[in-house]
Length: 439
Image 1 (cartoon, rainbow, N blue to C red):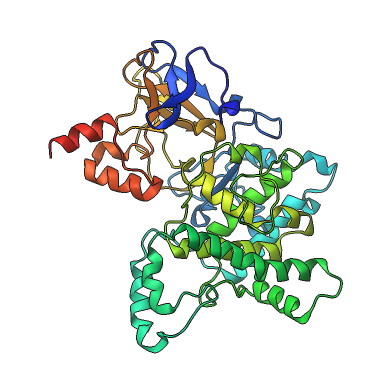
Image 2 (cartoon, helix red, strand yellow):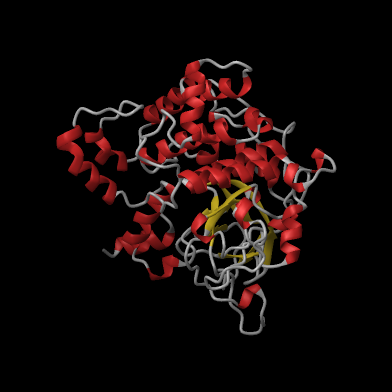
């Protein structure tokens, strides 16, 4: 990860109490800007400042600019000429043109509509419009558990493709064990993935291979519960990762965590550099949604993307983003300064509703504190980081809040619960330790 961190005489990355973190090399005055992802050099050799993979939640696709992620109080953006075909909208012609210019230049001078990325996004949009409903994130499984309870009497002995009886659906709201994660990915690779891939590559596929492909194209591969439509957001996020692997082809390398997948392909080093979450799926339902999305992608992506659409990459996209993604929200969280006019630094620190998320590898090395001494603000596709309202001492760790500003209104119990559920750790920052000592 440190090879992605720009050199600085103000801070460095080194080991600390919570693993690697960022530490001040000298005293840093309050509100001094320290870092901008605009100078981040990606695997592609470009310094765009944008995320390597990202997702705008489907329910906001008309309201969030596909290029700069601008959001205007729920209003639909006017530039929507790609909305029907690709499901994207733009706040300006400039953003639309910038988005179109990011098509892989190694494809040569081609029409936008014939590029691999355009065809992939068009296939995804057509598939989702036909088969999927916009689904809320699976943070709250109560409705699923209730439905499962009502069906137990009639379907107690029913078993889905992964061997989970419907009576166990209630337990699917629990985090899956590592063995279950391993088994699910191996299962899809030895069944649906193998058959679908063969059906698309062979001149004369077998009847079983044709059926697997047909089922997937109908939104019902054998690897999923046929009653559940594809998850549009999971599918869209994994497609973003496949397209990034395609754009950075030739620079990828193998992941040390890929040994358990039968179809191994290199993963972009920008992703491998991030700390993986060994249990990135908050529930079995989330795991199954990712596994099913992989099968769906194999059925719909252009043939050029098949070598990059692997179980290894799809699992890594979930694992590496789990602890490293930044939320896309309506408002910034930078330091407020009465004299800073209309700059990002003067805006509200309220975070607002989650519109999506993205992964900025060089910005992922900041650890969390519920009393952060750093502030962050997003300007378009880039993130900027400042020292907090007070100066930072030499040797002090530079920390941001993973809670987007919500920590100011939360109790220590609420903060710890949210961090445990969202990031998998029990917070022992100075603020949590002091407040818990009083209870």
